[in-house]
Image (cartoon, rainbow, N blue to C red; front, side):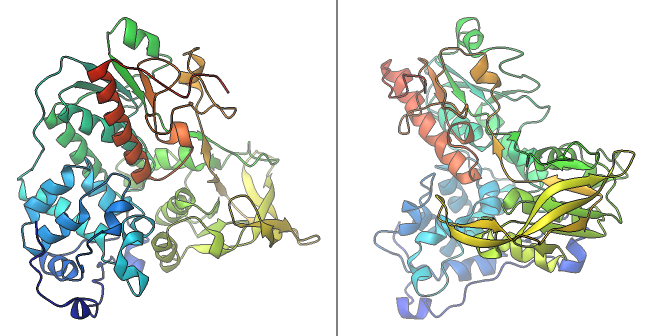
Length: 486
């Protein structure tokens, strides 16, 4: 579709990027209402005007799921918002979600030519706008499925990789059933990301759209316990299995005192708040230690740590402090989340590392003994390594500590599938291109293969897996580089 925008590129480049309206910080830090409020139709059209219609759009090249961004933006400019939503759904099964939580600044917007000299087109905000417009209009533009192939695929895990694969595979005519260990569908989208960033209504709506396309869902099934991969293939006759369980096993610091009451992993804390609805206290019994008027520290510098500390602030913490062993420049969290946290009153203790958690005679946390750090030479990740400063030990008061330094692979499926090759760290080995594992008919992708990453990268893995599964089911051919155990 040709771009109908006749404004010269020089004029387009003078238009300032449209700002997303937000809840005021002193309102939102006491509420779980969504922080970003979305664009109106007029603002979305104005923002779409800024696109300079590159002949080789870098935004598309940098999108992990291959959304036809240029065409979507053209449709927004033309005022065909439903057409833009339908175009999005050709490649992205979860547009209302990625429009909210995808790190666009490092993906599509990072490839925008405008960003080389100024600010990129707000692609993520436009994506969110058209997905929300479609949802509120009630006119869902779902893709048409191909005729049934008679083949069936089991997907283990209902996070972004699993849901993305399900959306593609159902369109290709296969029967698709998604198995989820918890009692609700959505994986990390539901239990890991707070309501104020990603409302659960949005996740449930996108899941319902997949259900309307024909995807089947089954909850409370712990694959590896309730049923094994072998049983799914041998007894339930699935032609292929895609393992997309994520990397949900928490990593702790390994320092004294982590057993004390009041010390959580970020996974447990956020799951209790999000999935068990602690954010709706007193309507729901609060399934977390009451942190109202208490000192809370969160250890880590990524998006999960940021989610946890902002959540603690909303639950009424007297102080909510992020403790990070490097400087602010090295933090992997999104710049927008850091900005929002500062505005909301979150305190930052950079270049600080806990050595021990301290408790009282009843086993309750009272503080964290920490040491100050300075930055040394860069490590393998390119970030400067933190080095302890002798004699700088000090104690931070804390009634709750949340450890958000990362996760690793849960070994349940690997331990119950003996011919499934794994890496030394117990992640599943899969060919990087086909996502085929050492076991015929079994594919794996997302965090269970790569380690913790972003929602959109997991969705990209889901799409790649779906294409590979379809090829296998169509041709019956099986070749893999992941044939030997590491």
